Image (tube, rainbow, N blue to C red; front, side, top):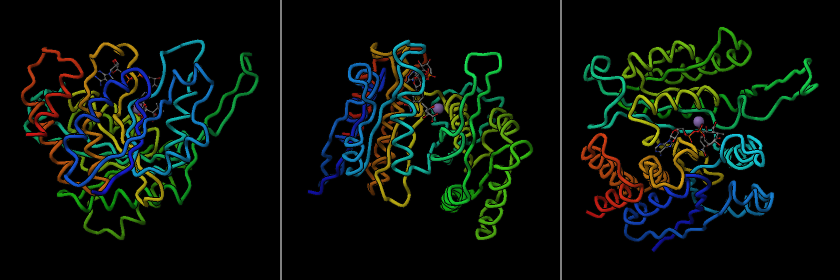
Amino acid sequence: VTSAKLAVIPGDGIGPEVTAEALKVLEVASPAGIKFEQTRYDLGAERYLATGEVLPESTLEEIRAHDAILLGAVGGKPNDPNLPPGILERGLLLKLRFELDHYVNLRPSKIFPGVVSPLGEHILKGAEVDFVVVREGTEGPYTGNGGALRVGTPAEVATEVSVNTAYGVERVIRDAFARAERRTRKKLTLVHKTNVLVNAGSVWWRLFEAVAAEHPDVTTDYMHIDAAMIHMTTDPARFDVIVTDNLFGDIITDLAAAITGGIGLAASGNVNPDRTAPSMFEPVHGSAPDIAGQQKADPTAAILSASLLLDHLGHPEAAAAIETAVLADLSARTPGQARRTSEVGDAIAARVAG
Ligand code: NAD
Ligand code: IPM
Ligand code: MN
């Protein structure tokens, strides 16, 4: 029996609820001969409010020694006076992405059979929607580069500087081309705003063109972010792989989730393709304070994130078994009939178990 070391960070709000279901399914899906040794890390709002700790250095180093990380969601209630915005998001989630060099934030988007898209058949016309967003994960406006002057005065000035290094942009573009090459349609769209963000846009465009020259079999395309949002809502089937910066990718993938059946289905992987540190798998959604603690959250996104985790660790069959079980569960859902979080997890786990 080989064992894989899994760090589990359930986090806040619905995070622990959906993570419990993902672990339930992971347990039954794990291939014979592989045992997940779980270490649970109670990081998040509760820990911060009790101790002031967000992610102690020693904990980060412990997490680094794992094979993969499964995360639920982090973030407290909006406008909690004890929890300033960004403390957990920056100090925990982004810290992990940056420190563990998760430069590929992989966010697949598919309209699964049986799932009702808000776009409707008059827009989709039977076309298959199956694309993946390769969101840069370690740079852009997320680096915390900027500052505020004369805060609270009429002369206040606040800046958030987007950092785009040739090294960082090239490596994510290379990854996106490699992914496009492995897909049937072999199409890659760069999404940016080169007409306004001319400095960042220029490095993205130049490196995209340069790497494209090495991949003549990949069809390339460019769209400004605003126009891309038109195409995503009027003709999402045109996308295959999208590569974009950290902030555009964040926004695009919430829209992508909404058009493919809702945020409760959207899974993601924060991948370190060079495997110099563990990759981290998590639903695209957040801690959803509005429905937390009520067993109302859909755990499907967390369960599909566990499938991405298995695939990353070299167990594609176990990963596919989860996806098959999720597909069957989705087809069996009755619109308007709500199930408890644990009921959905039980149903999917039972299907995986056969
Ligand atoms: P959110 O994704 O938590 O919620 C947006 C809406 O989607 C809410 O109405 C929520 O009820 C609903 N929703 C989310 N997940 C759902 C699920 N599984 N099933 C059913 N409905 C679901 O986004 P938000 O409200 O903007 O953010 C809340 C907190 O989460 C903030 O503190 C934010 O910073 C944090 N956040 C964390 C992550 C993460 O940990 N990766 C991602 C996004 C937001
Ligand atoms: C996401 C979230 C995070 C992001 C926040 C919570 C830092 O919205 O994972 O999509 O912006 O990346
Ligand atoms: Mn987001």
